[in-house]
Image 1: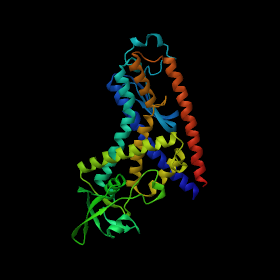
Image 2: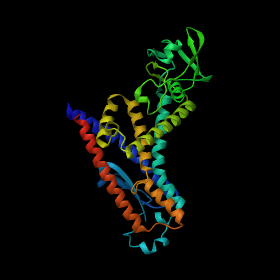
Image 3: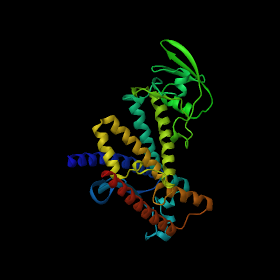
Image 4: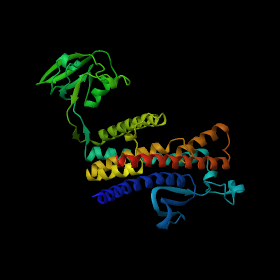
Length: 358
């Protein structure tokens, strides 16, 4: 049983990770070619090459033994040990000979490709499969809550709040949680339109810190709603922005040591989630792929040397100084960044292993 679960999780992890890495590196590759930079290698994975081919531009496309990541090697990318280091400005096709804007675009295109892929998958799912939405219908009313005192009952359908139309329960939560003033609710009950004035309150002690106001209604179960192309794009972009916002909040919790272990997942955790997603069907698996793609794009934008965000930061420093940062300094910063990432990966993997036995 354990062997089967492990095998499914491993396959799921590789099926999720491989296309995400490919599209990330493809973003770098296409931007490099467009800006006249020679790409020497396009690799999915690290270590010894398993198989590959060389195209007409002399780029080696390959799949390597260790499947955790990938890279695009551009000519003149790191020149510290290059024989032509002293004369690299005379060589066409060198990455470091490209303009500052071109280098910035090449580096940024990897994370951008991941984010766009995530949006594309989510938009396609909403269009062809549907989006899980909670209708603005009351399933239960909490005792002694503002809603119960106002006269709200189960099966009431909320049409608008303060004359602003609501289309799902998310809209209701957003409006209510941000207000402590009395709100006017337009409600449909047995084909009749009724109006209730309800003042949100903090109903739970745990909401004191977040100052999250509620009226005491519980939603019905989510239903699958298909959307047209324009609506799918709208919700795809909207949900991507919400995911980005939640990711940023989670990142600040992480660096301030306020995040819980259960909210952290490394390679082992992602493999387990991928295996679970496979068993839940293709739409859930694709949605997980979209989430991970957006996450991969955002993580790579972190200003840590060795990540794309680290290079972007160095290019902004170059712009401010009016000259490139010394190559040897860049190389040292990248080495430090790699060590930091290895340390973080070890810590996160250790947390993953702990969770397996809890």
